[in-house]
Amino acid sequence: MPKFDSFVIFAEMRTGSNLLEAAVNALEGVTCHGEAFNPALIGYPKRTELLGITREARDADPMVLWRAIRNAPGLNGCRYFHAHDPRVFEAMVRDPKCAKIVLTRNPIESYVSLMIARATGQWKLGDAKHRKAAQADFDAAEFEEHLAALQGFQVLLMNALQTSGQTAFYIDYEDAQNLDVLNGLAAWLGVEARLSALPDSLVPQNPEPLEAKVANFPQMEASLARLDRFNLSRTPNFEPRRGANVPGFVACKDAGLLYMPLRPALDQPIRAWMDRIGPLEDGFSQKTLRQWKRRHPGHRSFAVLRHPVKRVHLAYAALIGWPVFAELRETLAKTYRLPFPKKPSDADAYAEGLVAFAGWLKSNLNNQTSLPVHALWASQSATLAAFAQIATPDLLAREDRLAEDLAYLAQAAGVEAPAFEGPQADPTPVALDQVWSRELEEAVQAAYLRDYMQFGFGAWGA
Image (cartoon, rainbow, N blue to C red; front, side, top):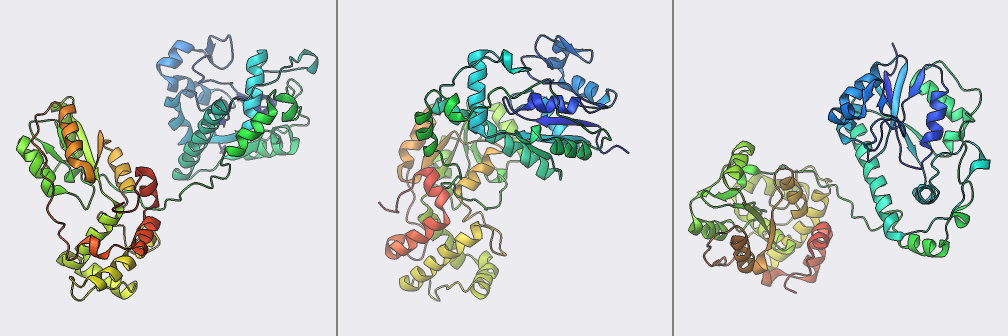
């Protein structure tokens, strides 16, 4: 039984894909049909059809061509770049009988090669005597865009392979000119044929060092020094993904306003404000939410951001005071040694417990505890990412300027809205002013670093 019935070479422009295709095509019984799904051509330049499929037929339904490739005699495949027809990507990547070959190259090398090819108009070279020479002009912004596109596609591809339980044959630009590696690829594909020599129909076009290929090499060096090659500035995020909690959304039945609460939420005053506009509707499913949207063209949705310190304070107060949290409170006290004040209004005991709770939250949000992340203290960035699966809020209002933000929102939705009456004192046994400290701020910042960065929060009360 053949290991694979098709293959795809995932590559990019100027990564050596022409060289690799020539090597693959030199294997008896194996055929690579070029860039079969390139929107600008079909397989190769100046072709009008491939395997009897016209470019028009492919554009109407790319699966017609993909089936033709798979059904052709022998082992058949093609090259696929990130800018090729996305409609066929899922069919390729999710099929375990389709072999995935991932060809990569140093991004700055591929970028410079691309610039030279554009300058000379020479995209392949069969003999050095026909080589056209030119130097590339490095453009930092263009390179960063080039790099982002390559990295984004590689992450997409890797995730698709991981979630479908597959692996790929990874090969680098230099490896594509190594006979042993190419024969290893043949063995991995499950074909009996082997190469006795490298194909001689193509040769590398620009073998010189980068310094000789780039006209403004010093500027390129300076620009690349600014790039965070190892992603040192990245904030790791291990917080589990959340559901969108569509039943918690609140809408005006007759007006196009939709409220998407971020817990702990300002539900009471916001509901009161919306209720003065008209009757409310909640308890949505995804189906009924879509129906509401269709009934309200021009609708506007919103969520309200709150300072992380305030959210931690409210969540801790809920842990202390809500009967539903009795079992969780006991687990936190016994397993994680979190202190809870015997008398909730004891400001000193409350402050001590609040700092300890904020410290524990860092582990909980990083998925390092046995307890799930509760909606009351989930990060706002994770909750908004969950919302985005269903509907991205049109407005992220801020608690400290909610009256102005809601007035703007109502105007955008074409709604005559009443003035917003702010909330009363928070339902906590101790006011945040009484227990805030630099230690608390630092603990909350450590737990919610992504929220501080993404939403621009400063220290509480600053």
